[in-house]
Image 1 (cartoon, rainbow, N blue to C red):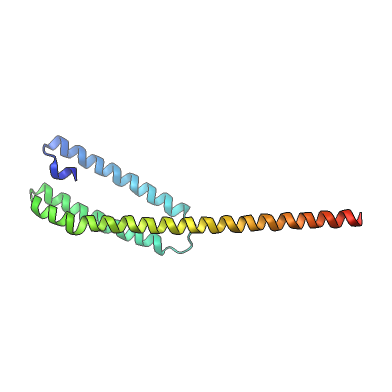
Image 2 (cartoon, rainbow, N blue to C red):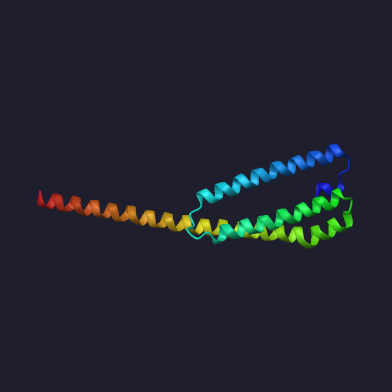
Length: 133
C-alpha cells in the first residue's frame, strides 16, 4: 500500500527492498511449515502455495502499474484482484493451521492413551508378580 502514497526513487527503492525481504521471510516460514507439517495430505499445502503464487503475481502486476504511473489501473487491480487474492491466501493458511492443530491434538490424545495403556499394563504385571512372588 505504501507504493500508492510514496514518491521519490530512494523511498520507493526502500519499499521494494522491504517487499523482497518480506517475500524471503514468508518463503522461509512456508518451507518450515511444510517441513513440520503433521498432515499426510498435501492438498492444504498445495492450496496455500497456489494462493501465494496468485497473490504474488497480482501484487507484482500492481507494482509494475505503479512504476508505469498507471495508478488508477493499479488501484482497480489492487481492490479487484490483489486484496481478494490476499484474503484467500490468509484463509487457506488459517485452514491449514486449523488442520494442523486438529492433527496435533489427535496425536496428543493417542499418545496419552498409549501412556495410560502402558501404565495399566505395568501395574497389572506388578500385581501379578507380587501375587505369584
